[in-house]
Length: 344
Ligand SMILES: [Mg+2]
Image (cartoon, rainbow, N blue to C red):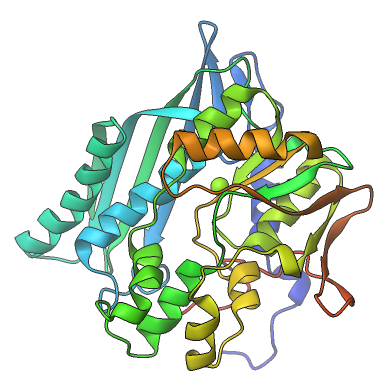
């Protein structure tokens, strides 16, 4: 091995890789309504829109079986994909499930992972229609889901306008709190952290709320929060060619977040901004429609509480207005799959 470090320009970030694929894939064709760059691709087949999304989870990167039970794993893999369909306002229809496993996999492991996948299929009326199995040094799960667009057009990342309210559909940072608790050696069934562990292991994708919001035709832009508000809002802003200003005092945290954060010597605001895996919806709309959309979202799905966290601006990037009056740029502070090691 040579001792000289590689030229940083020869290395790629996640965004670089997405841009490269995008440039090689070329322009949208007739039956492609939405191509690379949103939560899901949208195909226009015979006048009907279908969303297609896929997600890959790798043992040791996205999960660790010492914290995540195999049933949770199947559930969570489905939740991550369903959340992308929710972000488009689509109705889940069909899925392909692929599994990579080390040699001689225990029956109980496979049945439990599938149990989690099938539980989510039943809850969301989704039918598995295929997939693949492969031998792998660690567990790898891939899902590809197809959903039907039931509105005139799917909700996209690119529709945000300056002056829009930026809203989220529920508390932020709960999943990160749950992960921090489990990594600290806390028991999964400990009463004081049960809310956070549940948010981390069994997230509830906002499928019904996403459909109701898209059907209202009052949403300008929508995506789901998978990597954290800081990076996901920056992606929405880039797609819409706008900026955003988020107010720290408006960030919704779970009521118990401050107590758990103090105990773990963590910052609950950091959990909310960069924690990821909350699978809430990020929505922009005219400020006068926030109340109406909040009612619609709450009526459509239990546990959903849409609230404003900031506004879309004419600038670029995402600025955080701190409670003490200071401001800082937080663009892309969330998770880049290739920037650093993410411990599960
Ligand atoms: Mg997404």
